[in-house]
Length: 269
Image (tube, rainbow, N blue to C red; front, side, top):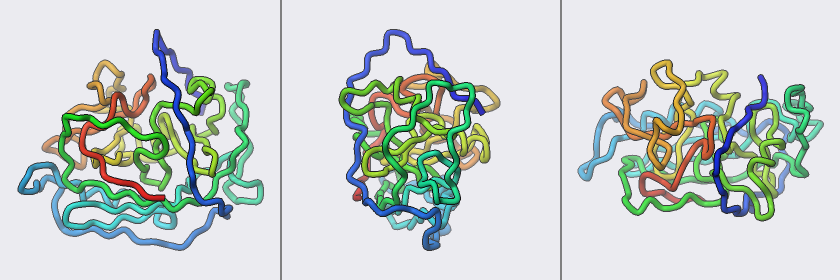
């Protein structure tokens, strides 16, 4: 695996905090087993007010020792410990998942001063996501969660930092921790796209719309294939009748553009 190079043309970022108030307990790479629950609704059912039922996605959150999903009538409640199931230079050196950075094609790598720490993130996400014409801005901190419990962040960096410089602090699987130990992905989580497939379901944003990898129908997508919110309506393996969904691309803003496509749920930490 090589570190990605990103070409950005005339793109100006307003820099905000890539910060977190997460718990400060050190992780050992092992945690209590949790379960994922869902009901028997099919993925294409709609509520009385419209919106595709996304409950089928609950079973896709596979890292049961670090993430659980409970399906309710109107929402999915995702509890995540934010512990990646892959190796990282940001785990404590006594953790079995610690591995020093070993990407020779990125000599500019620099370890940031934070370590991965177990979190207690709870996201309540709409079960029947619908478009919201206000397109609320994504927050600093977690705006979604990946299927392996890891937080998904937007394209912004901390005050005084440059997100393009932060690329050089991403570990061998393209994540890094914020202050407070919140490990997160800003860009393609290559551990997931390598193990699940580049066209696979990767996670959910707070508005309930799914995030997929950079490939669709054997074509690697670019920003030009997507709308201002970094998504489009198309069929997917889980939703053969079609659903709005986000895609990861190799270009800024990587996962999400100008805000949520739908109405976001809420998050507690």
